[in-house]
Length: 420
Figure 1 (tube, rainbow, N blue to C red):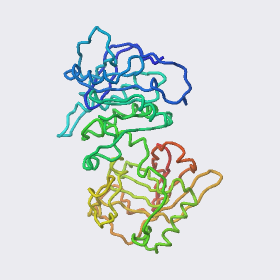
Figure 2 (cartoon, rainbow, N blue to C red):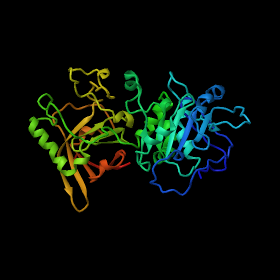
Figure 3 (cartoon, rainbow, N blue to C red):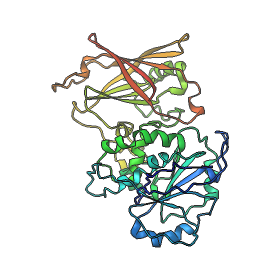
Figure 4 (cartoon, helix red, strand yellow):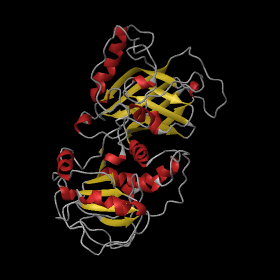
């Protein structure tokens, strides 16, 4: 049986908002099932966002697809509504918890999106049993539950998954993110990821007051837990004759040979990126086996994982509208550019199953003379320690994080890369 605590407070959100109600109605489904059981309809909890003033009209859409005693979930409102005494094929109504304590600084949006974005954490706090997925949608969204089950059953629900579709608008995807699931059409979040989000979501709301909507907030919160760019293994590089050598001061052939040094250590991890924000107002990004960057300011992880436009497209252009993925511009100010370290050598300790790769700064480049607590130009090498994971791509990716272990006056930084 899926049961909720016989208590009070619950919250959900989406493009319309939600709060908490003193409802204790249980959802009945089979219990004590193996955790690896293939997803069925009763493993899915829907979180449908609505508002009190729209509910009487929008509930007619939900009736078209909601299956009494088969589909399970809640409609989250921003205030009470009169409930019909007749039996209707509708979800249980909940009222969202207050969000006035959170700040919201986007002039083009509405602070009510905070309530919507908390739908995940408030659903988790219900402590429901035998749940594999939380599916978010709006009150004017039509779902086909049978096909939703067919799709979700292909994924291992015990791992971290954030599933949905991006916008049909190219400009929308550029403005927000190609990695963002647009909320109205439905967002599916595996329950382990939902529980991880619940632990950090309120902190993230405080950290990102400038975000516009509920769906980009959920994507921003998830980006701290899921894999960073790139999200697929390195397979190939095309047009070697047309690109600059990927390592400076080398021929194209020698540059690829340098990359093969890292490939021989851990091919699965090659060029996978991990991020770290340092207390000295630093942000560090490591593309394992290739390069490391130190930025002299704090950059949010969602921005840090977005590739810089250090490349041309096929038509020799830099315009972001010509790219099918998100990118960010490169500053012309030397003090705002990252300090770049390229991999120079590496080795593997067979006894500890740990690799050590060394990244060296190219000497003779421009140096920022701006005063700062700790100038990254003082460092010549970054040594990165990482455990081998040959089965990296056999499971759903989670972000790796960097942790600075030591900084030596001799000019070396020692970093550990591992799970966040």
